[in-house]
Length: 330
Image (cartoon, rainbow, N blue to C red):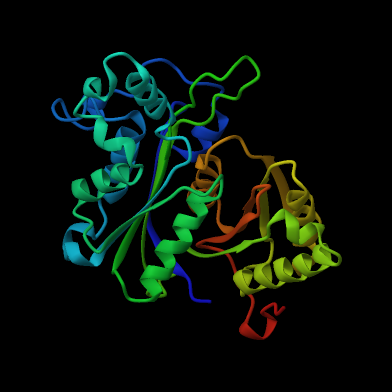
């Protein structure tokens, strides 16, 4: 499986504009994002917050890259979100159910009843005309977007893919509800030219629904499939592979926690497990951290109870890779 190069990484979050700061944040500070300084004084005030975050991250990522040199019809976008428009949808529902009805919907926000409009706004801002896709699969959407971007590059559908994940904290649903995530991550992907200083990544996905695990022999068959997928993606990953499992508490998550270590070769593998909150931003932040942190290779595996499973390998320069003869095989 060929890798693609990551030529830019950008993070926008309440904790700070780096993956480390975002993951270490303890909450959302009021007024942390000012659209006037991040985007401009006019034309952005009434955009949904998740759209503002995505625009800011995309602009930051695009600065200093070759994006402006590539024809617009050869630039693509894949945007991921789960609850990015949740509050807006709730507000729209309340307005439609009111005495005034749909006539009272604000013209500037009404188009966002369709979640893909958020990505279209980013595509228009950056001149991304090859395609504009929106991924919304629970929790794995950001990693699914990365896979879609890498597939498009390998298939020749574009010369550059901007991949972004954005979330805005969810509406209040009671004292026991989690607030969700807030912020955005953007990556610029291009075909790898073999330069050693550029981070590269590979990505893949599976679907393992609960009924498969519940069937006789289903768990064993799923484990074989997961091991094969992991080995196919890690390929020539360097010794000292870091593994980050971003999971919920489902049966699929427990199967992954047992199966992934069995698929890896070598005693120098380090593994960490993170509980995934609502939204797709946490996996994107961990990927951004792997691409901008210390050198080496990091395998990220994220999954959710209904069967979505995404596997991504991030390779930072400076890591020594195994020779092709040592490549793992299913």
